[in-house]
Amino acid sequence: MSGDQAMRSHAGTLPVPEFADAAFVTPPPLAEARVAIVTSAALHTKDHEAFGNTDTSFRSIDRAERDLILGHWSPNFDRNGFAIDLNVVYPIDRLEELAAAGIIGDVAPKHYSFAGNQPDDVATIRLDSGPTAAAEMVADGVDVVLLTPV
Amino acid sequence: MSVLAHVFEAAGLSTVVLASMKDVVEAVAPPRALFCEFPLGRPLGKPLDTDFQTDVLHRAFALLDAESGPALAEHPEVIEATEEPLACAMPARFDPNLPAAVDEARGIRKAYDRSVAKRGTSVGRSFDADGVPDALAVFHQIAEGAHWKNDVSIPGKNTVAAAHDIRTYYEEAALELVEGPPPGGRQAEAWYFDTTEAGKTMLAARKAMADQEAPFGFWFYMAPGHR
Image (cartoon, rainbow over all chains, first blue to last red; front, side, top):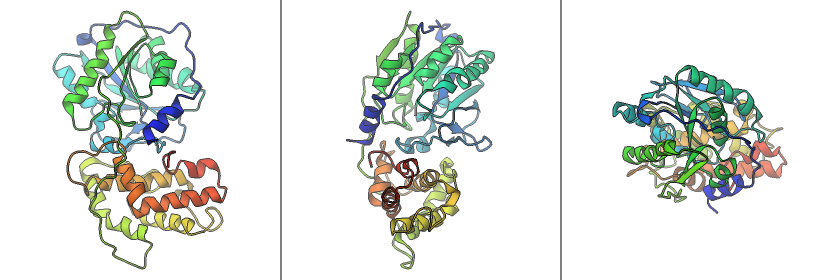
């Protein structure tokens, strides 16, 4: 079995949290929407504190920042793609192009990074760090969040 | 990611997930998700392919037109990771008095430095590039029978972080040692673990630590689980 097949099979066996009465927010038209990226690649800058193993906190990344470190602790995924082109994980340049073309309204001033390897109960990102990042994005006038997994 | 989508939506934000695990996204059922069967670690699919990445985003943002959720779509193209090792030009053995992995790590330093100048680096969790040969010397000792805890001192005191730094040093250097189009997902991993002295040393040290009954998390995450 390949590495990706092994990971996908394993992930399918893990317990997942349930969300009763899931919220569903209708966005403004895309051409008017401010878009932010949130990734679970544990991206951070040299100035940030590095992510620890099973880190439940997040880092915010300025829109203009491109010198980023892939801080995810898992050895179970490809990192070379990010080394070649950060957009394959964090498509910030693609968002800028879509904004320049008028397809999206605007690129958010800040984007967010969490660690993908969370404790199984995901309690902290659900109740603490996730809502905190959401509040920051709401304050920044974000309408749409694109989530990219690693 | 799908969990965060629910959290963000509850806070008043609209979300779209680029999902990489179909079973998980179907179970967690975020409001909108595009399942992309691409190599893990490459949620936009293809590095340096602007048109492809933009197309992924168009398909994801199209889900914002859904009137209710969960709205789950699939990207029509499957990209499989390939575990065919990269074909990298490697330096010849230079100092026969050193363990082969240490000699090899020194030999690819210039390639690593060229890569850093172009792309930056994610080496540095426990030590920087200067620390890679010394760390490999320690893992070589473990592979040869030294006890991981009693006989040696692992740089940074964290085997997983040390393994990350060594592997990332190699995989970044590989980008300067290979010709042709961008490597596919896991090709650098396959090259490192299957063909380099460092990768073989780390797998041998990992097995030795398992045999020495080191704590599971200290050795298991030194390499991908299927290895």
